[in-house]
Length: 144
Image (cartoon, rainbow, N blue to C red; front, top):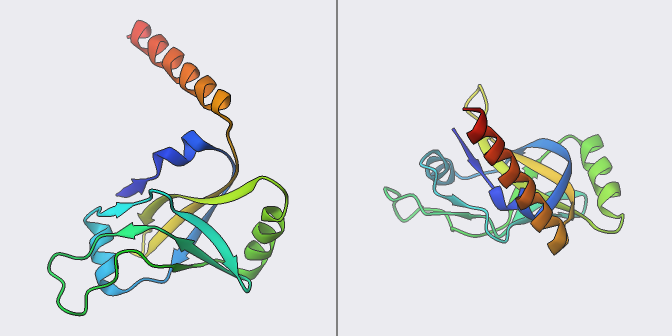
């Protein structure tokens, strides 16, 4: 099971993808397993060489007690140092952004986030992408 951020592909040209671990609380993991995640306005950024994701909403776990997690707060992403340095250097270039693409569980049952390094699309690029998708959909329909 994975939770996709479909608007990221609409708003950005994704060039590189990375799988990062996430530092989470127990009730956050349970809520992710239920699919209660929203990527609206979420983005990744660096503080002192560490990668964080901001504005990602993980709904409170419905069976949680008073120890339930806070729905929206900064969450740390875990990558190897050489990957972090590579991404940070790339982000210093003009126009690059780091956006969360999807959350999934690996074979060991650990929550991971796929993040994408990309450049923002202009409005005419977005229209062109929609036009191409419509054309592909039409071709598939005629081929069936």
